[in-house]
Length: 79
Image (spheres, rainbow, N blue to C red):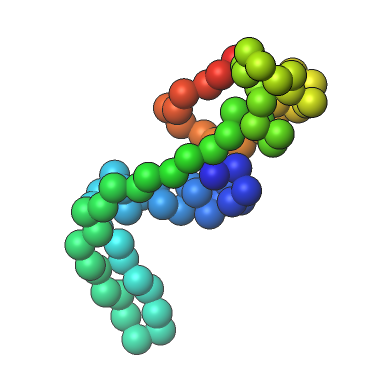
């Protein structure tokens, strides 16, 4: 998920909460039902080993926190 821009992910928040999506064009507005479940995954850090007992993470704690901070709202944090 952190590979997507924050603006792109935030754009999905409104349809998830309201269960509708509105398309605005010069010809007018159209509203469609949008009751969906968004499922995504991410590694705990860019190398994928933060918190692993068998292999050491190659990223510093500050970089890991910045990486995880790209996802807003309630989500699991590994730090």
